[in-house]
Image 1 (cartoon, helix red, strand yellow):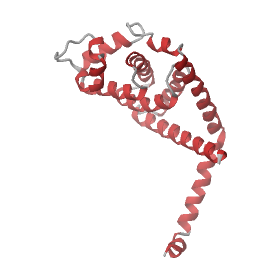
Image 2 (cartoon, helix red, strand yellow):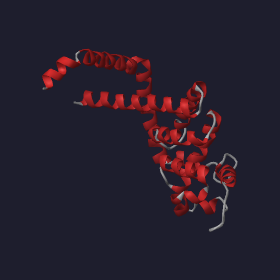
Image 3 (cartoon, one colour):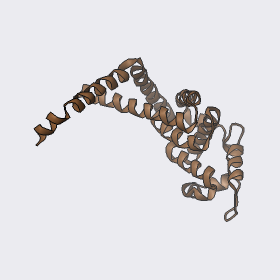
Image 4 (spheres, helix red, strand yellow):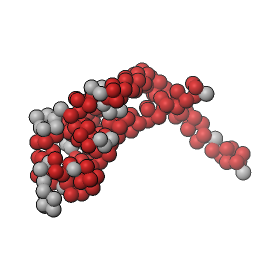
Amino acid sequence: LGAGLAVRNLVNTGKELENLQVRLKFLLKDANEGAKAFDNMTKFASKVPFSLEQIQGGAGILATVTDNARDLQNMLEITGNVASVTGLDFRTTAEQIQRSFSAGIGSADIFREKGVRNMLGFKAGATVSIEETVQAFERVFGKDGRFGKATDELANTFEGTLSMIGDKVFNFKKVILKAGFFEELKKQFGSLDKFLEDNAKDIDNIAK
C-alpha cells in the first residue's frame, strides 16, 4: 500500500510538471523561453517560503500576462512579496495579480479586502489604468520597493523553513522522474493503449 501511494504521488507530480512545461511553452510562444521559465521557477522555489506545487500553479497563471522567461521571473518575485505581506497563498495571489494586470486593480476583489490597493498608493474610488497598476506593483513590491524584501524575511521563519524542506523533497521526486521513471511509465501506458485499441472489438464483446 505504501509503495502504491508513493508511486501515485510520483505519477501525479510528473503529470503536473509535464503539463506546466507544455503550458509555459505555448503561453510564452517559444519552447526555449518556456524551458528557461520552468528552470527559473524551480530555482525560485528553492529560495522562498512557498511550496513548489503552489508556485507552479501560480506560474501558469502569471505566464498569461508576461512575454518571456525574464518577465515571468520578475512576476514570481513580485507575487511572492505580495503573498508574504497579505498572508494569501501563492496561487491566489497570482490569480489576483493576473486580474489586476488584465483589467486593473479594481477587478481584484481579494486585494481590496487585504488593503493592497492602499499599499500601492491608490485612493478609494479613484479610477486606475492597467498601466498605472503595473507600474505601482513594480514600484512597491519590486526588488527596490517598500515590500521588496518581504519574501526573504518570511523565508527565515519556521514555516518558511518547513516549506523549503518540502521543496527539497519535491526536487528529489523531480530528479527521479527526469532520470527515466516518467518516460518509461508513459511508454508502458502507450503500449497498453495500443493493445486496447487493437483488441477493441474483442473487449466490446466481453463487455456485452
